[in-house]
Length: 355
Image (tube, rainbow, N blue to C red; front, side, top):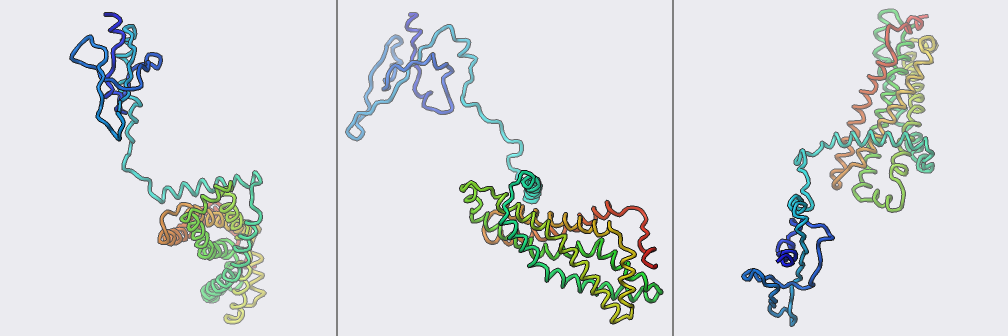
């Protein structure tokens, strides 16, 4: 009786189901037969009754049977064991919630910015791509930036000279124009023009690469997409934009002086002398810092929006539009923050501009 209790066959139906498992250790399970012989439950002390299944494809089919040697000493362990294996995974906290694409892209932009800052410190720069993008952002964008700056300078000259002449403040016109161009107009106008021209191109290019799975091909070739695609574009924009800003400042102030002399009779020497007395080195330095930050914003936003593009050609167009809009809005927000940080308290630049 004791030996019969030690060897009790277990039903195969419980082993068939994946959600159930015997609460036994591997040492307690012994493989007795490779074929299944169902137990006759009508006779309590019977051992095995063989049952054949009808012919299947000219062969007799038998089911495997596993018998387990159960020891009465381990009843407590068996009864306390888990009833199912593997244990069910906990339900998700928010099963139907998906992060908004704007939040996802914003986090991607922050991650890309951190990785791009880290890459040059470790010397991981693709020099050839960086030079190509530098040529694309700098020399190829000079014409449209200078043309825009010249006409904006002449438009501001018309408004300033008319009002200041009526008040008898012709000698301060050059100082006002120089401060406006150096602190605000030149970096903002240059960045907006570059955002319209370069940001759209970057977002469309990287979006097309992402949709066509060419970025995955780069990973297969053991090439980091951040080093090969993103870092050269960010470095090129951040380097080229300060130089474009300085050129736009020069052309804008020169066009303003020429228009004031030709239309309103204010001498060029008066305009340039007033501008020289009003400007301080910090004005030009702050302008370069602003343009550097704006270049980073344009390139990081365009690259982040491009590499997170999903879908097809329609999504690439929507990504390009969204990248340009977000870049321009971010430029204005960053301009306010930097202006508030750089220029605090009462200024005295116009006092020196009047001579």
